[in-house]
Image 1 (cartoon, rainbow, N blue to C red):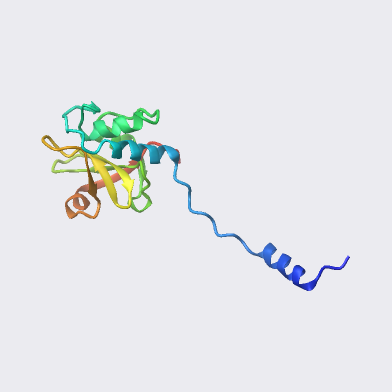
Image 2: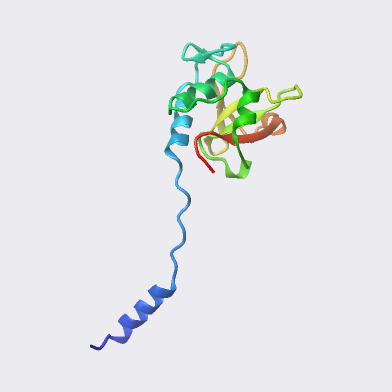
Length: 152
């Protein structure tokens, strides 16, 4: 059987080429954590709050993770210690951002939603809101990022 030259050339090229690898798929749990946190924008701040009546920062992260069946520590400092470290350049929706807002330890956390934005419960008198990692105030105070929803 004789193979036409053009077909042979195409088969040879196909055998030698490699397809570019697709970007890693976003983990559905991380995306859902980010969606839950985003759905709470506008909810009042409540010190010690971890339900839809009101949230503090770590209560918001705790609640969003519970929504996908994950139980994480309750305070920002404990969440920071327990999370799998993530490089800021490798952030994915659902990751947590840990901040030092004036003390010597991590005392604030936000849920990364993508495109340099995160959701957090800022402080008494305010509501759950979006913020940007481009904001110099937050960029200066960012200590680390971490993840609970995926294993290494």
